[in-house]
Amino acid sequence: MGRVDARFSGAMFTVAPLRIYELGFLGFGIARSLYLTATLFFYCADGFAADKRNNSMLFWKSMPVTDFKVLLSKLVAAITILPGTVYGVALLSGLLLYGVAFVTTMINGTGSFAALGSIAAVYGHVALAISVTMICGLLWYLPFMALVGALATAIGRWAIPVSLLLPSIVAMLEWVTTGGLHPFTTHTRTIWAIAPPSR
Image (cartoon, rainbow, N blue to C red; front, side):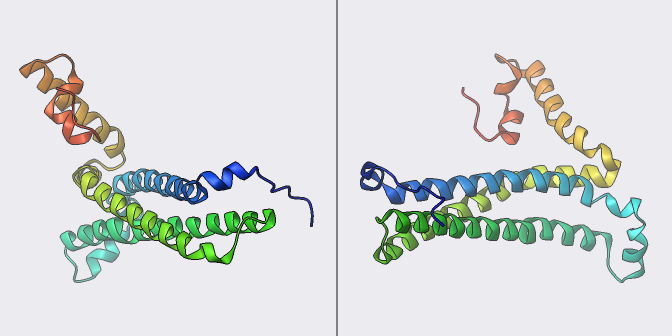
């Protein structure tokens, strides 16, 4: 309708147009991975204790299903269905980003349908990188999710503050007994942190 001014300087398209798309798509993937981590934490903190509050436990008890199978099904759903949905949304975000970029380049006159193959290769590489990152993140935080879920079954809603406080207390006790510069250089901190301590 002539309301969008999509003109760019030629330097932007001669430097790295595919790199701009790749970084944008990767940014979407990182944002979705952070969202997944936060969502899984609160799901594990509440999903394992919610049955007691809303009397769903009576439904589970009426079926020939053990408590272990109920908890295992919730954990499997947490590490398969939700990550799969978030990954699908990340892939859709990459397609929408490509659509916007391609329409913009067509309006500007620098885009062509010959670039579809190279864009598809970049899309596949970034999609693979996002999936590997999500799988590694799930494996890395699986013990923490198990801790939060176990605390939720034992103490209910207090699982959120206790699961954050418990590793800090253990790291502080380890620092007091074994010494060191500060509590952030302990082995306990290494287990719950993203990066290893600098020793």
